[in-house]
Image (tube, rainbow, N blue to C red; front, top):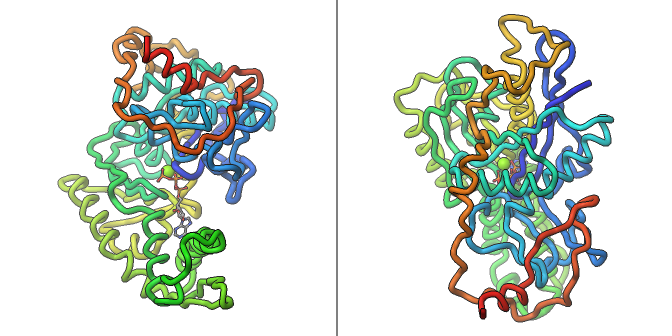
Length: 416
Ligand SMILES: Nc1ncnc2c1ncn2[C@@H]1O[C@H](COP(=O)(O)OP(=O)(O)OP(=O)(O)O)[C@@H](O)[C@H]1O
Ligand SMILES: [Mg+2]
């Protein structure tokens, strides 16, 4: 059955959902399993020795790109060994991988793909992504601002969107279906990864010298830190569902456990959460909201909903709300609203119907050139000291040539 695919490429996690175009009545978006925990997949691309990309697999950090989706438009590309990749290319490759994987499962390609993007993306960032998507064989992806996607699943009146993921915070008012009334977002506002740091500091402070006197040059200390960070993140998640937990620390002298209660965790994160809530209140001021939708994995922290005003709703898995909303919004864009009129879904409306002009994120070929000027090169040499051996890229995702630029070639061109 034809379907729309919604994709949310987050800083740490990518999620996808489909919404069927056939059948009568209201269509519910369905999350698609991408092979990682909780249905999504880690937003990570590892350039393998055979020149392909492995998606979502932990590996040598020198060859692994993460967190690129929010770097689209950055002047500094992502370095993978000796290759340089603009963030939009990596994002497009990941979307292509998701689209292929879903198409394999569904037995057909999506009728339309809707990719959610940070509300702050302007025409430059959107055109970069459109071009990168075209270059991986996805010519007509609809770009939709994250709050618009998030709001698609909630309410008919003005919807407040409070979004907190691993690295980004966003607050918005959306008038369904596609009117972004006001918004604010920022990676400077503390989010999930910062809360992990606070838990880490708590453990450090509790253990005192037993922790601070560990030899930083000892590889075992680095291993201990990495493992502890993972355990701090896990403890934070546990505390959204329970009131106390203990964090294991594998000191060379023996393993110990540091207790952490929800009350103490809330004390740690309260200033950041209160700040985010204050930003949200500023953004929504003057608009009577029907409902506030909580989205993003960090929205599971109970303190957040307790501090937000008005009626607050969130899905059982708020980290999937944007992908699901993107799929639902895509169906809406193609077929019109499900309610109140039941719609005839057995015949797809043609794409070139003027009534279907996408109100948001539509790619306009005429404006492509206008925004395509390459950003100026950074004034610094970003070559790391310890470059791994060169890997040549044969293909990026199935049958597609990667276009990463080599540092050597860049230097040669700069020296012309
Ligand atoms: N039960 C939970 N309680 C608290 N935090 C949680 C819980 N589950 C997941 N998280 C946190 O949610 C974050 C991931 O959320 P999400 O998948 O929405 O982020 P993202 O989309 O990858 O990042 P971003 O939107 O910031 O770019 C992580 O920091 C994770 O620790
Ligand atoms: Mg996100």
